[in-house]
Amino acid sequence: MNLSSILRQLSGAWKVMNGRVEGLSEFDLTLEGFWRSFGAVFLIVPFTAIAVLSEQAALSAATDMPAEAPGTGFFTLRLFGLGLDWIAFPILFAFLARPLGVSTHYVPFIVARNWSAVIISGIFALPHALHALGLVPLPVLSFLLFALFVVALRFAYLVVRVALAVPPMMAVPIVLLELLIGIVIELSLSRAFALPI
Image (cartoon, rainbow, N blue to C red; front, side):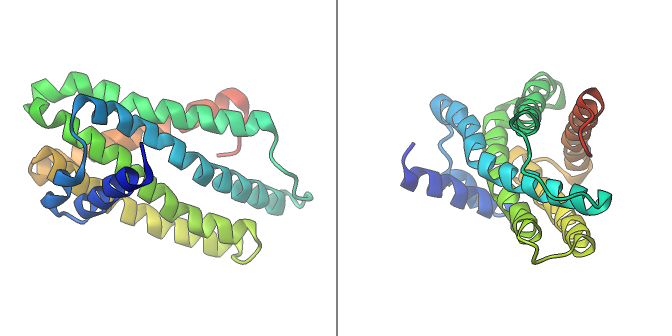
């Protein structure tokens, strides 16, 4: 996928994230475009690396230990968690779409979800980068991440509403389901491999 195509998908995602249905027309909603949207995860990897560096700095500050570069194993596990989170919800929702009556909107929704995740990850990466560079203290980082979490939930809600064309009472549980899946994966990996949460 070339740069202009990626920018077009991201432009469509930004519009959908802001409740603009015309953003759907900018997506490649063919079967090939659907599968290509999963490749957007590679754009998230650098943002994950930034978050890992920030987490390492926060852990060092909390334990009064000198900051160290995160090991390859630690970063690999984070990427594994990202991969699980990336595919778990689309797989589960594939089984739920027909009973919920939204199977015809499944492809646009997943495509919008995948590309909007790139933008959301980039937004979260900014305060992480400032913290990793020592420009933002941990309390401020925590506040910023919480504020961005609320914003991200709003974006996710609008993606569901626009791409699935569902009412609020159906959109909210879908957003919460994806959030729950991510939390379960994160907690499971943290407990299994003794990672900092």
